[in-house]
Length: 413
Image 1 (spheres, rainbow, N blue to C red):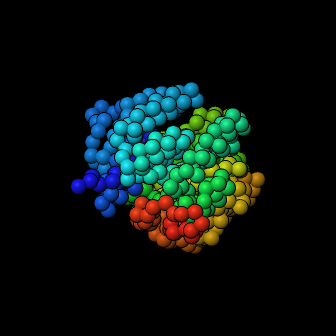
Image 2 (cartoon, rainbow, N blue to C red; image 1 turned 120 degrees about the vertical axis):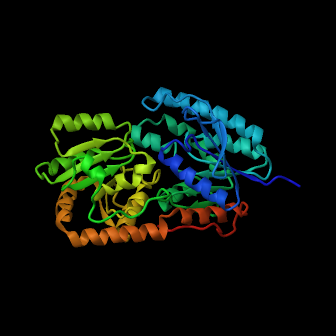
Image 3 (cartoon, rainbow, N blue to C red; image 1 turned 135 degrees about the horizontal axis):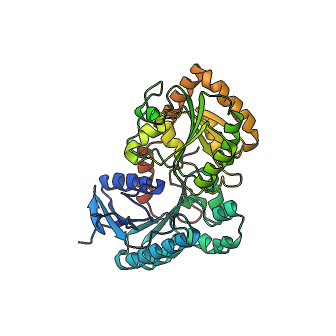
């Protein structure tokens, strides 16, 4: 009797690491294991004492590769980290993947999927690209350096030869299709709110607010990675416009490459209404996301097809409104407005954003309406159960023949 086909996920981070992709993969892998899939995760070792290289946790086999972890703060170090993990992951896949298995490759490290596709297909396995960020285009968009685009043709071939590509939204799916991937091989499956989040009490009041000296203030918060893809200078412009409003506070919760620069800019400008707090562990996420009365979500112009700020699902899960600052016609701007749980403005409208915050602070009825709409949005399309069902359907089918109609589930946003 042949062994049950295995479902491999490959991503640099997994539990107990806490980057967003680690949390997403942990949720989905454990949910699919519950439904009967033989799930194996290939990830890097967090170098924490007592963390085994191989373990089975909540039904998921976890294979951790011991490689470098030196590069969070510099480019050369990140390249070394990417290479060390990629080499280890490819070696492991070559030794373990068998015909009939499925290999799902995420996008950390970038372009690992190009190499993993070849390795998996030579072993007779199916390949699915789960695209969280579109590389190399996103690297060029945030840096202006065109060298990464040399890898685009290689990436396109890997996408086209894969059984399926999973995109986070319709903007991203449209870009994948423009690279020559047949539409019947593209699944639009949004991310979801981290498991365990629940709507917060109203009005917002918590020990964390008290600890951060925010009691009695209207808090405008940005929570998550302070990465280059997020337009955060516009947040400082809005804060500067409202600097003489003592009851309005801006709080950045998280870390990232922009944090030091932002802290310097705040200090130089004398913005006493802007505060920085460290990233919170997952067990504190519900409390941290509940601190702001209004959450900021931002995106640089030109990045809307390459990344989708999935933080909106966690924000909605705790019942908080959103102010999106970014491309006017982007999918997320349309989503926030159509689902009526926030505002969407482009970066040039920072003065209007400030006026919106000032008015929203005192509009108790609108605050309540937006909070309720946020929870409805989360309940209808932002839960792990929705993604698990879509993935289960996808994994149950084979590659569609060219020219056939799409049978994979699509969530239109």
